[in-house]
Length: 89
Image (cartoon, rainbow, N blue to C red; front, side, top):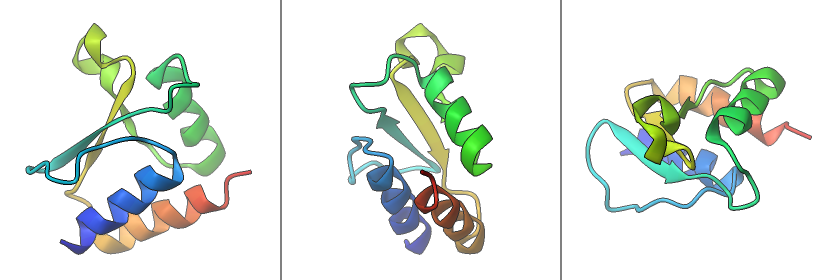
């Protein structure tokens, strides 16, 4: 789907790793190895780009190096998130 492709672009821009064959309403991705915590990493994105990405730790301690992105947003909303992330310094 178009939404899935935009989320892949977002995750690629953020240097995350993920499987393109995942199905469902969410895409799970591993944060870059240089980052210690999905909580700190996603907070930086939230405060600097005004984009919320769900940190995996809220689903349990094994999710500390993961994020979950919803495919339930419109392509317009996802495109705006990509634009904001592309503008990160």
